[in-house]
Length: 278
Image (cartoon, rainbow, N blue to C red; front, side):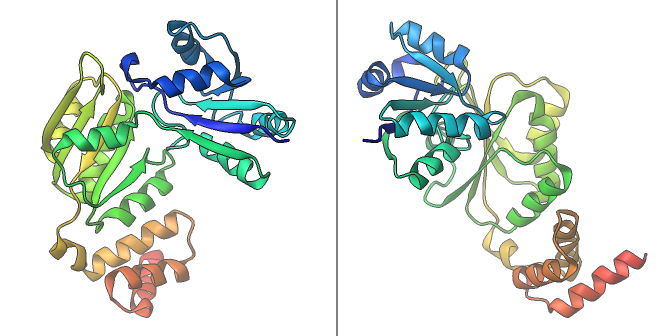
C-alpha cells in the first residue's frame, strides 16, 4: 500500500501561526522533505519534534524527487514544507505533488499561512480579481516577455521579491507599466511588519537610494479599462519584438501581438522585418 504526501503550511514569520494539525502531522509522518533543512530544524526544535529531514529544493529536485517517490511507494508518509508559508506555491514542491499524482500517491493539504494572500488582505488594493506572478524571471529576454504580457492586465498584480533585487525589479516594473498605485508589504507577521502604500515611480526612486531589508510582496493596481484596450501600432510592434527576444518566431510573435492589439498580423510582421533591416 502506498504512503501519502502531506503538504504542510508553516509560519511565514511568527511561530505562533502554526496550526495544531500541522504540528501533529509533522510529529506523525515518517520523514519531512524541506527546502532548507537548517530552517526547518529550528522550527522542529521549537516544538520539540524529532524527525528525519530530507532536503528538497530547486537545484536537487530532479534527483531527490524520485527518491522521495520510491519511499512513498513503499508505504512511508512524508510531509513537504517550505522555509515559510505553503509549499508548492511559487515553490519546487509543485513538482513533487505532480510526481505523486503521476504515481497514484495520495496527497493531503494541511493549510497554513500564505504570504501573497496575507499581503493582499492588508494592502488595501482590490482583491476580487488578482493574478499572482511570483518572482519575475532573471533572464533578461524572459523578464521582458513577462512584463510585456502583463501591461494590459486589469487584475491586481502580485509579485515576490528578495531585498537585494527589489530596486531593479521596481525600476523594471515602472518602465513597463508606468506609474500605478502600489503596496509594498515587508516582513509579514514579524516585529517589523510594514505596508508602504505609494506609487511605482516613488517606490522605484526610494529603493534606488536606500538598501531594502526583509522579504517583500509587491502589489500593483491593474491597468485601467481604457489603458487595456488602447495599444498603438508602435506598442504592438515593441511587444512583438520582445516576444521574439524571448524565443518566439517572428510569425508567432506577430500573431500574438495582433491578437492583443487588434492590428493586422501582416502589418506587425512587416514592421518587424523593417526593424531587423535597420
